[in-house]
Amino acid sequence: MRRFIPFLAKPPLVPVIRLQGSIGMGTRSLSDASLAPVIERAFSRGKPVAIALAINSPGGSPAQSSLIAARIRRLADEKKIPVHAFVEDVAASGGYWLATAADQIWADESSILGSIGVISAGFGFPEALARLGVERRVQTAGHSKSLADPFRPQTEADVARIRALIEPLHQIFIAQVRARRGGRLDESADLFNADIWLGQRAVALGLADGIAHLKPKMQALYGEKVRLVPHGQRRGLLQRFGLSLVDSGLAAVEDRALWAQYGL
Image (cartoon, rainbow, N blue to C red; front, side):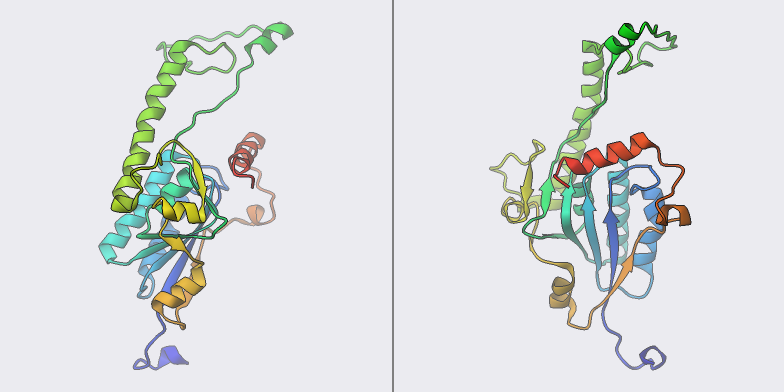
């Protein structure tokens, strides 16, 4: 009935954007394309006094992490709406990149934060092929086209080319953290070697602003009657029942490996 009486003040509105899962272009992953309508809707519906990000992500694609964080930041600056990130189990690697889109980062004492680094991982089994009597036949136009081919031995040139990619990515990640966390960082600590920290230590290092949970913190900042409205990715019928035919077994293994790094 309240909404039909225009002169009654409405309770403060805080949309809650859930960022749960690994980051990439998989059907179950967080990506800029899949999150764009969610983020746009959260910033545009009603008159939000703030946006809350509920983050639980072990990371993934650097590009998608950057695109999602940039979209959040762009809308926050355009609409002058403060953003708060709340870390659940983990905001590591790309997950922490997402958290840096917020003006303030809050964590649980047992949350895991950090892993400010870049990794390139794969498999190689050329000896197994040889034992099986399998001959690898590859023709390329361009000598780098077969970079890190798992069916042949890794070379020094392969390693050099991969490092030429991941080291600049690491510097981009570091620049993002420095730009967003500014003078809050503990400059005497080595924050960018991909270490991870629990909540209270992350606060001491300047990677987070305090220990707090979403609802009580929003109530403390915006009043007991603050209205928290969830916003998340919509999943198709097959995905809701765990029957997606698109996800590959390898993608599921890679996703599981990301979480396993943090004991989850």
